[in-house]
Structures are given as structure tokens and as C-alpha cells.
Length: 250
Image 1 (spheres, rainbow, N blue to C red):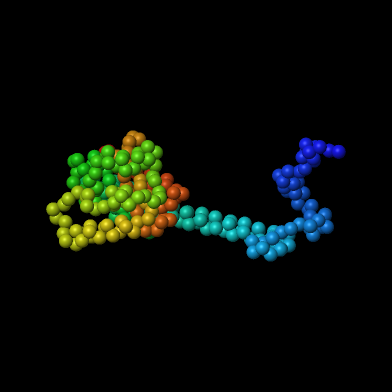
Image 2 (image 1 turned 30 degrees about the vertical axis):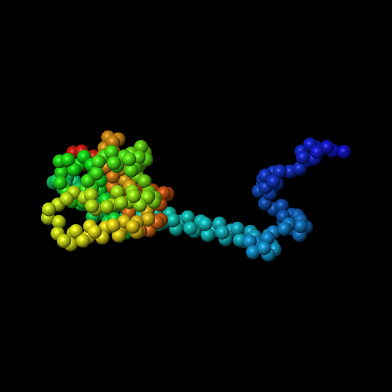
């Protein structure tokens, strides 16, 4: 009699059966009698035929392929829009005679993007010699403390952030004070906190020059999936590098 070890050797592994069936796709056609012994069930618990199961699998595969194709088309469209925004932004920045206008231009251009509900520009060292609208007034040390991973990786971050970090990034109360700010502008600033509470996803782009992070550009969206962690950030990274190079020469 065969011992247990011999019996184990004679037993086929599921992977071996699978490999054989893949190499012999006509196996069930040539051995129809075995079909009556195969037990196939649907998710509903009802018994179905092998053909029905095959059709179900092919239908699901087709659905997945359609979804992936649709995602590719959406990404291509978004990338095309971002490309035009990047081009327009860079051309307009190059035409500026004063660097103090850059933050306002960045903010206005980014907030034109569908899905971007708020934008903030933080370039700490820039505030020393320049007084300008839409520029956040914080220290580089504070930036590092709040966003250490961005300073370490030097790449755009996409995803959700804490309430405290949202306030730090988008709260207009830390904007450079201007004596000529009118009542309408002050009212807009007060309503900014209401927008911040509705922000559910962010893109935080480092402004970089010679591998050093000079500051950050933050974009916030009410849509929690707009700036998802899987979002391609090549255009954001490029904008940050271009702005860093331009600021170093202004």
C-alpha cells in the first residue's frame, strides 16, 4: 500500500490543474462527460452552467476594460487642460515686470481650474523684500513642521489633510496686511474659513530652486476625489520648479 507521502506526490496541485487547462483550452469539449460533475454557483447561490459563468467573466472583464479606457480618456483630457494652464501661467509670469505680482497671478490661474475651490501661495523668504497680495506670511520652519514629507520628497502631495493643516494652508488671516483693502475684500476674507471647512482634498506643490524648497502652492477642492493620492503630479511639479527658477531671477 502507498504511504501518505506517496499519496501526496500523486495529488495534483490546483496550480498544476490550472496550467494544464490553460495549455489545453479544448479539454472540456473533448471530455464533455465531466461537465455534469462540475459544480458552479453564481453569487446569488443559484447553480449556473459553465457557459453562463464564462459569459459572466467575459462581461466583467469587458466592463473593467471600458472603465480603464474611460479613465485614460479622462486623464488625457485633464492633462491637456493642465498643459494649457501651465503654458499660459509661465508666459504671463515671464511678462511680469515685478515679482510681487506672481502670487496673485498664480492664485487666479489655479482657481480657474475646474474643481479647485481655493488656492494659496506660501513663499517665506519672498516676504522680506516684497509686499504683495495673496502671499502667505509664515516662516520656512513652520512650513517644514507642518509638511515635512513634502520638504523631504520634494514632490507634490495629493490627498486629504487635517483641519489644522487646512487652516494653516488656506486661512487668509495670515496674508500680508494691506492698508488699501476695502470692505468687500475683508468680507471675502472672512468667508474664507467657511470654504476651508468644505475642503476635502488638496494638492500641495513645492516651489523648488536648485533642489531647495522655497515655498508651497496649495490647492483645495470640495471633492474628496479631485486630488486623490493616485493623481499624476508631473505638471504640478513642473510648475513648482519653473516658478522657483523665475523667483530666483526676479
